[in-house]
Image (cartoon, rainbow, N blue to C red):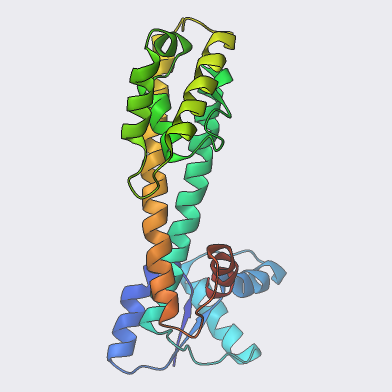
Length: 234
């Protein structure tokens, strides 16, 4: 009988070795062992003391033999962890983008409805300032917008015309007709590229999670529900 303290992915090679050689082992949650360690008067932290502590826990508590999760379940856990991590990074990047946009072209918010839609971000990258919008004729703006629109989600000529008119009004009302710092424009383009890449990766992860999830017993779950379930898979 072997007793281990859970160490995340660091324990994977050891666990794999034990599985291949059919050893019986127990993996203990570090919170449990830490609780016992704190209850002791002498705070000793060495490998020998930790090993003795785990052995003591084994005789004091009733632990079940470690049951290795299936490959599909582990894939689901890793994918949802990655999705959660990328989502947080994407949110931070969006906040940085908004802070820079407020110093360059704040009036453009709401022109396309969703500020972080593909067309809104790509158009902001092409025309980041009110000056660049006002220096471009209306027909060029229309054709550029039509070019940037996704082929899967076509828009009518009337929709494009309305967005161009909104954009021109926003450009005229924008408090910053000229951008003082070129670094703002550089940052804006970099942040837009990052947000678009995050969105692409998150969409790919969603598809893989749903595909992995459909192999289990759950066929109708949103990504938010999957993240809740991830708490139980951690």
